[in-house]
Image: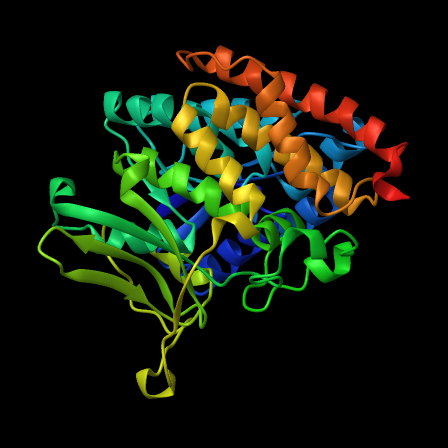
Length: 392
């Protein structure tokens, strides 16, 4: 029985993970759950799963939350800004499934790896902001990072039994989002509701907006470089209209390997939970005869300024990816709140990279400080944008 610490349990990936565990309770049990601020949902999950531990970053009333958790039978309760990290440090578990949104997921990943515990990672910011440090920590402590993103899970599976030196290209696929091939100057008045209408995937609001800007592909390019130790020149993005091929590996002899399935996040979640074995499951099924065709399209990076700036940050290295990721997080929050236009997301990210000093990312403290400075800067820029002609 594998004990799972599920951080970010009230989000889209967290709920999907619990649905996978629910139909595989002979294999997995929930050791701990955590959330940012959704305490009602977290307590409801605790009543169902009876975890040993709960962590909540922002309780509305800490005393009431602790009392409710104790009544359920929760033995270890963590609250406050370091709740996730302390939970990851103090709890005993076999796998951390990190589905936390934003930089709050970085330190818990290190905490698990230092205990030589494998991490099933959905939190993009961990590998983007601190990827080299994270991968070094995993190697030093004999732990493994198991990607949950469908694209990186696909690459991970395709690379089993292969030598990375035999890889010519890693191909990350994209559906293209809701605004495929539209020029940036036609997107100024896009509403949050329009941007949240993804044609294929059902995801949380932040990742859905990142999919609309294709910023998520930029993050995934950086993640792929970190996870598989390849240069930026070996990673490409291609549109796969049907979202059936989740990624491909091109080898030096001209061969390709691809991972295909019905688009459903529960499948890469199951793979990461069960690794290094596979578990028989019918939660996702794919009938090959129903895949009528597979279409690919080149991605014009000029149509996607967020993707373009992400490639630049990847090439710059150092703290640039941390600045990039934090800037996007604040910009997307501001767009969803109606404070800036859709096209301002890319402008704010680029401004942060042009303004802040990029230094070597040689410690987690340096990375987190770059993250903090980027958030502060973009927050100030949003105030300027709100009062400018951007919204008029």
